[in-house]
Image (cartoon, rainbow, N blue to C red; front, side, top):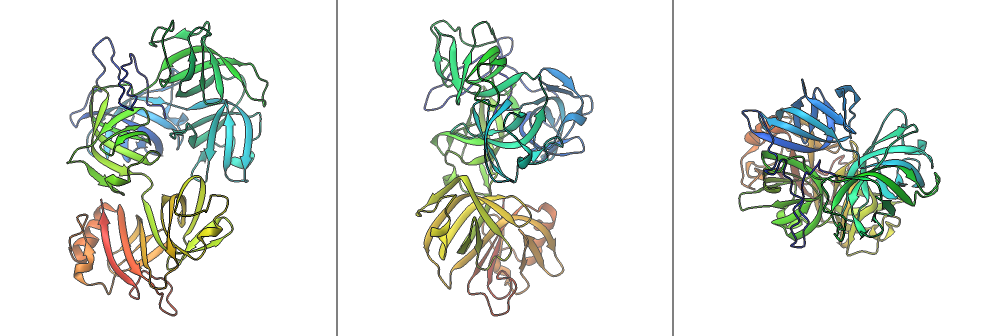
Length: 489
């Protein structure tokens, strides 16, 4: 969950850790561009230049850095975590002047557990969660091809417990510079050691850049980058202690920007209007727009993309988008490790170690208590018709007349029918009344404006229906049971 490089550190304590940077004593401001200076941090989702947080950044003439070495854009991969500094021309386009590649850990695989397609790795003492949204480089095609002792470079975002949610994994060949970015704990200034996860770092003799003076100081809770070449353990045994060659603080490479877009997990919370995203303090106001979820749903561990203005290392949000914005509700049927929902044909839901369960004894390894229960699920799409649940709430016993809710990104809209698809489910609106088509403010707008907005912007839609499914019906969200469709910002 690294957010670039800080040059100095200001520690703000209010149950939060905020790292603020200044270059040359006055702070760094993102430069260039008439459309607004800015910075974007997140995973690469596509190319044609590069796409980060839904914005296509032109990189003609940009400096692309990886491990302090300039590289070509052709070396970037989908799923890599990057920080783009430059300017925004619009909400969907910009120009990158500097792109920093930000892996979270590079080192030996110490342990591996899980199935052939997903599971958990320990890399250089860091727990790494791999699921079916994790992307792999060609030299390690899937999770099944990973072995203990392999040298891996892992990109991802750290969750509040320090676990890395992997977005991209690449196999490396020796020799490599071991790297880890994470939060300092157990700092011992006298012994010149600290820990990050299960890894002990010995920085005696290392180059120390821009850290508080080691003698008598406390580095605990600082987010840092550590590089080293020697482990006390022998691969694939745990590294144990990494002898560091360099230690420096980490954070956004700028502290002031007209526009900042940051992807990450909420790691600390004072309130839903004052929280920490990765290591960055975020404030919301009455004018902040919330997309894909409610402000009240901001809790520690939720994944967000926040847009706003960066001033003095604090991000004031104009928009907060929930990255895991799929919502499902209906009666559940459990078969092994998957959940299917009555009235939502073809959609399969799985849970993992990070799924939060409410009002149930179910766990990610035992979903049986949810069988024949009415459930509410929040998660993220992991395929055309599959969802990884981040939260599952058991509401009551199965109800033959229960509401059915399907919220997600529209994959295909057909104005002439008129239908659209979410997670493979066709939503047929042909028999809805005009008042059943709602805008983002839950106000009736009629079918034509609804589909015009849908065709122009795509985005999220919530469809609401009610059981039972009519005999012979192939889709509950059609004329038999569909009650309302609503645009979600």
